[in-house]
Length: 610
Ligand SMILES: Nc1ncnc2c1ncn2[C@@H]1O[C@H](COP(=O)(O)OP(=O)(O)OP(=O)(O)O)[C@@H](O)[C@H]1O
Figure 1 (cartoon, helix red, strand yellow):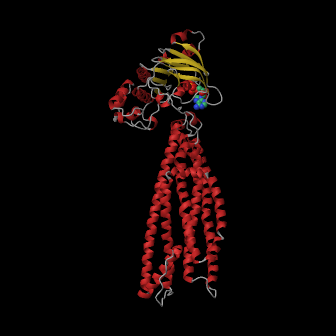
Figure 2 (spheres, protein in one colour):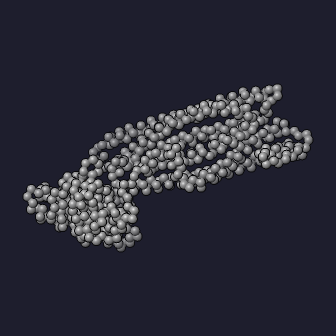
Figure 3 (cartoon, rainbow, N blue to C red):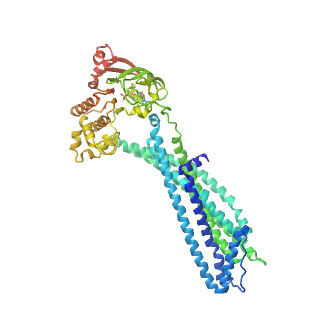
């Protein structure tokens, strides 16, 4: 029930939709039912039962019997018309009212559907916006444990199921119950014993439908899980197509996909079996009831003193056949809600994930970076084991500190702690003497530029890829940044220049070109603190020199923390820290470290990082 109300909360403001929907549904139903009740006078005329021998008496209005008065007045007016104008004129009169009520019923139906669709659009907008906001505010560590495809499936297909669940719940709460109640009021009005007789069958079909719904909910959860797995495989395949083809692993990935795809098909078939059973079951119980009504209703008519008129009986059967529609609608809507509840749970699992990296109340603003960044006894772990232990160093303004060490030693992790991709568990990181966690993160990030090992580009133009973190960047500014990053020349050689689309993840550019675009991006942002993780991918000497020069230009007059994979970048660093298994084991300048006998830096140098 909690999930159900939470799903409805996406349709805020609910009253804006639910109240008009309720009103329109009532009117659509009233006029819809009226169509059928008009059958009684119509049939009377046709069967010649409407003969009137004297002037009928006009009914007297009483507030407590307003409904009865309306019916009596209609009968009075109808009889008067038959008496004064003849039966055929009365028939025309009934037909006109019949048409008018169909027209009105459809107008209200249209209005109710419109409100419903507006609400649907609102729900999907809200769900996606809330989901996207949440996903972008979660800490990076969360995504290490998640499959991307699974998240994508939640924001697309699960969100769709949820959107339908809201619509179905409107129908479940308002439309179908209103229709059912209205039909039953009229049915009771025509014959109480006959209607009581039909009601006996309701609990039987309700129990069967409830059983089917429960089954459907479980199946639908497994369907959505399977959909997520398919999306993940697709995502991995598209992302790694080059490797898959290169390693001739197409059959491996295909069989993985086929297996899941088959499982998905099996679940869809199982769901269809369950869902489609609801309809024949309600049809069969409906037919049973109709036979029962025919037998029982017939006995009421065929008595010596009939309790029911044949014209009323025909109308009753026609009306009853209409009851099946909302009754079936109820079963469809409730299964839609069940499916939506399963989808809702998958979405809420993410929405309920705690945002671990938050700004404190009254957090400080880092307006200007003035003196230094300091790591004091920093300890950090992703999972069980410590990845960093007792890290101490200072990065003074305008200086360059380089991190070197074997792969997996913890260099990237140290750099990731400054923009608070992760928070440390012990010790402290200080900027200008204040704890990093006391600042508003946004104000710190404003001063940081990151160039990572992997050049991350978006499927957009070169211009937008360079300008993406700087609002309103001008063409001249972007061009200047590209020149400093040694990127301008290759950009203008492209037919579309800065407007060239780079392709998915920058596929249409070479590795060196992608690197220089990301360097230009950092140049344009002009941050005072630079976190630079050198690319490890091998480039030809000329490109490498171009990238190296671009990096040197970028580092000028900045405070830099550099993760070095080549010695050439860091020979001029003010301090080099050698990291081993999460500890700093050596520190000093290039020259100092080379002098250390059996030192790790000297070793690394000898083994060839250059
Ligand atoms: N998201 C993560 N979850 C769990 N463990 C991680 C995660 N990221 C890194 N690690 C582990 O933390 C340790 C340090 O990794 P880190 O990436 O900082 O090393 P590195 O020195 O930068 O390596 P490289 O030079 O290869 O980039 C490694 O043992 C790695 O397996």
